[in-house]
Length: 328
Length: 269
Image 1: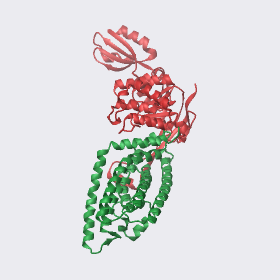
Image 2: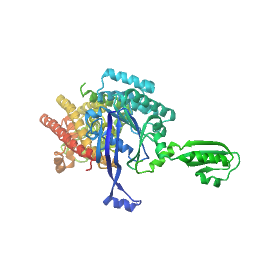
Image 3: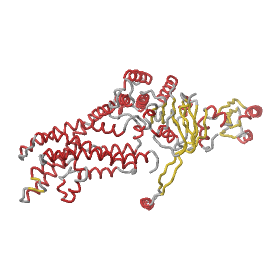
Image 4: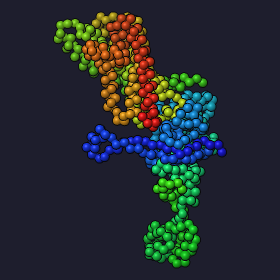
């Protein structure tokens, strides 16, 4: 597969100021401010093939948006090398800009006082899209996202979901090969989130557009992205599919027991980490390779009415990954 | 396709967006009336107490006319773009322009021109009414060629004023808490431009200093073109100076923005 993005030992550091609590310190700061350097991104290396959908996952302040900004040329890296569609993004060449788009969930690129149709038309001129192509693309996108009826409504009066869909149309009107989405589903209701996800999946499949998104919603990532890059504290700590997260990172399973008679909690302790118990139920965390012998033993020893064995919830596994600072 | 349609497009969008603020515009017209009233009474008192017919080279009628004309010219040429551009820089809205194959300066300039077109036309009509009325009342005669030159001077001063705002707004690259800064610079620029008094009022030293700055070519100069204070050779010279300052400020803004951008992009500096 041809590479869309190649990043090697990418780094970005910022300088910023701090202030201690109190008026005196404010005065001190007027004269002499403490300058600190923050390493927002530290030596990240990865590559992404054309047509992939990849998610950047990580807690707030992990460096996801900074990475996205470097990939789109908004920020200049302080170290390492990167190549996007064969360009160096920070040179901000016109030919490069015409081939990608970025949508920021929290920042609108539409004119608030005018209907979205006007902003979309402006993008047609900015990206120099032929009229025929423009019409066809617009009709198709409007159809797919089901927003024909609000195309001529002032953007200020649109719901958040409608506005987001308009942002997507404005970003896709020049058929970019590469699409960056920074939290595209933030603040949307569950139904609209699903709609946006389905649209992105369809679009990616149809046009082979490379899509890179950041999100806090696990559902976005699970449904859309075969591959996930987890960033924590500026480092890449995981690169692979979420299923793999279960395979390689997650060494335990959850066993839920339901008893027909009351069972004292301490009797369960030798078999695994007890997460929760009351008289008639218990939840244990048991190492994967011991699941078979232990569950057999439990069935023999306790008055078990029902037993279920589950994977740990994905959110929980991710949280444990967030705490890592070394690659898996 | 040529590269110009996009600028024509934002120009049109600017016109449309400005129409959304009709009421705001009407209110701003009314609000311009109050400072004019204050000045009217001040100047009436000043001219009334002293026996001499002239102050700073202006007769009573010329002074009142200047006050009104300058207030209207100020309304036309002040763009408020410094606020808009500074907040674009501050809250990161500049990003969306950075990733598009378009030029931020060009887009903002043409948006501003579009937004101003409607007001420009209305205000010009108001202004001609004022001139017509006062011209008769105070027996000030304004030649037709002055009216033509005035429209040209206004267009140039709008662009010059935009360039000044655009340059000042770049300060947002370095300072982040700056809303009062723009209150201050905005007012200062208007005063220095002659938007409140004719600049002769500041005395010999200051007004000769202002000759070496671009400000007076945004309000003072066009106001004096229309109220008939300037001779045609002075008007020609003024127009040329406007063009010179537009060129000069264009280069200054380019330079300042280049340095600012380096900081914005995190290149240090």
